[in-house]
View 1 (cartoon, rainbow, N blue to C red):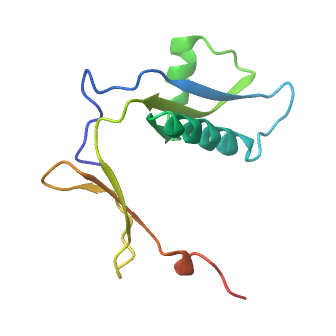
View 2: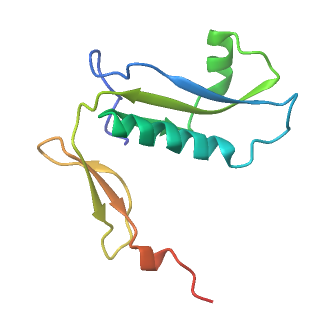
Length: 122
């Protein structure tokens, strides 16, 4: 969200998990990393935790900061932790806008398209 600078001290994730692809084994991870990320966060949710899958990463800076060898492609970062905010999933409006937003009470709204709008009937 453009009007949010990220979590402040005390609200940050408990840990970060970096999902890598070892390019010495395979040149592509396909969709396995997405499945793994979702499975990890579903498990975290079952334990009363929350989390975020982050794909917009400054990969070069992360690689340098953690000294990650070049053979590992940085795919995703997971940020699990105790939820600090309330998130509400809701159906997107007629205009199709799916931008996340926060209301005056700080509730995080996540509009989703209706299932009928996402399935191609051919």
